[in-house]
Image 1 (cartoon, rainbow, N blue to C red):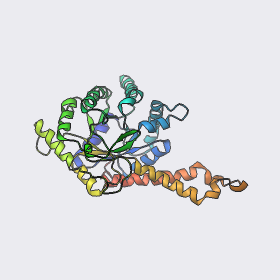
Image 2: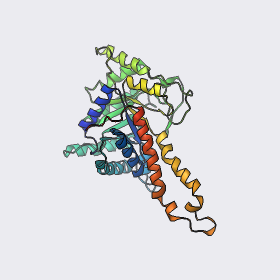
Image 3: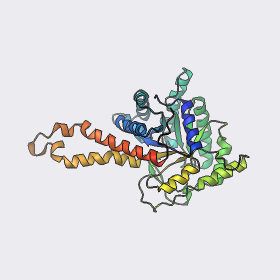
Image 4: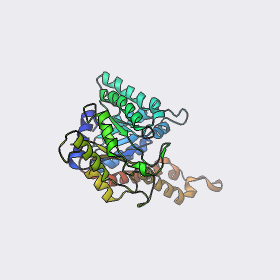
Length: 343
């Protein structure tokens, strides 16, 4: 199937919310990691989300110029072609974009999709993320209002992060402390500024102790039950029925999360979970294994000629793709999206 249309993407998110599962959102940095993600989703019979961070886009743009927009557009166009060969629906998303990179990343990409929509086509990306977690909430939401209006006009969903996620992600760093927990007041201010769908659909990356990167269980205190409190607070304020979930939540910094923590997050409205660290390792691990086991073949040691079949990038690249796709398959199982593809 092709890349998801705006209508299909909305259906994907609606189904996830109603059926209490979430889509893995897999960060990619190359055509090969893209294929690994697509393969994993296809083998799981799960639709999914592929995303490109600012650093990933810069890498994709090539080291000669390092242009983020060039890299993101190029891979997105490539994805629109190759996704046709996978029997699942895939949404394209751009990951964390802080304030100082908006003019060099999200805003130009919005302009690309605006032109496509004006010409009667679908947007290039199905959603973009604005990471204003380093700003005051007032400034964060002011920028989010502007971006949401543009996104809505271009048939795009906006993702917003209203409070910090700990650790480091593409140069955005936050300490691990008590500020990593979104309050009901934060949620109410978000609903007041961005509406509850009436101003355009958005995904909400609320913080419940999340930390980017690698950490061992117990080092970070996750409170996914907090998401229920945020939904209840906003539902009560806006007269929504008891038990309703006004927000579509995103789970950031999930590496090392227990199955119980993930399950609680799903029950409380998480429809998207970002996965980057684990898939990076899954991709690299078999490459390291291949290089260490075939040292004399991948290098021309002591005047020898090596083994072309061993150092051919396709040899170790296939191993990397298979390993990463297996990790995506595992993520689909953990998030209960296996077998839920839209037929």
